[in-house]
Figure 1: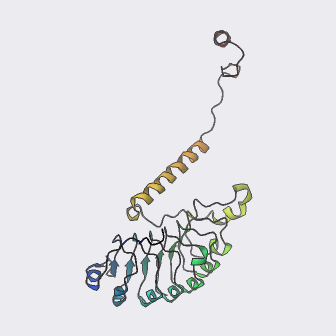
Figure 2 (figure 1 turned 90 degrees about the horizontal axis):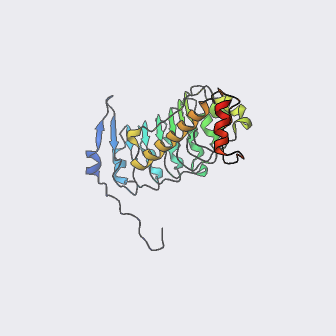
Figure 3 (figure 1 turned 45 degrees about the vertical axis):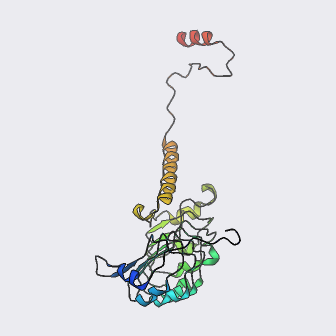
Amino acid sequence: MAKGEKGPKGKKITLKVAKNCIKITFDGKKRLDLSKMGITTFPKCILRLSDVDELDLSRNLIRKIPDSISKFQNLRWLDLHSNYIDKLPESIGQMTSLLYLNVSNNRLTSNGLPVELKQLKNIRTVNLGLNHLDSVPTTLGALKELHEVGLHDNLLNNIPVSISKLPKLKKLNIKRNPFPKPDESKTFIDSIRRLENLYVVEEKDLCAACLRKCQNARDKLNRIKNMAMTTPRKTIFPNLISPNSMAKDSWEDWRIRSTSS
């Protein structure tokens, strides 16, 4: 942003507005949904609603999550995807009731992931995809309840062994990272072969631009896969001479020779 230039003015969230955004989920939990509201700063007023079970601040313009977010001690579900967050607060480790954490499509770097994440002993799903991570914190290996991990679309060239050996891990998405070539990483590939692919963010939860990017990438991968699976057809006429730009014989000569063979 140029010097002296002001950032976008976000929507002001009042306590009254926030209260009107509380919904009851199908299983009777209270969910505060402030997604897609053009919010630029974390609304402090929502700290007075810290008894909610789920908090959705996704698809906004938020750059920083304050330490005070730890006041949401009952929170089991936190969605912060598609913002401009480059660092998570250390206090997130105090939110030990968390089962689901989605911080995909932000600006997180490896240094922006605090070691306190290892304190989330009950967490089952973590999505760190579409960020700027060049390494995975080994502290994730301490989260023995993890079922699903999203690390796709980052800058990773390896995955800690502790991640692939998590006892309850069922789904791991590591697509579109600059991993070594297959012949250089056989051990690594074998260690995660038992895991399924994971897309933690559903299509309906993605913004138009992100959905288009994912769809284009998926289509490209499918084309490459189809090309790799197609085996060359066996030549029916092995002695047939075909024309090309380097042929010395004239076209007429080629036609005569090919019909007489």
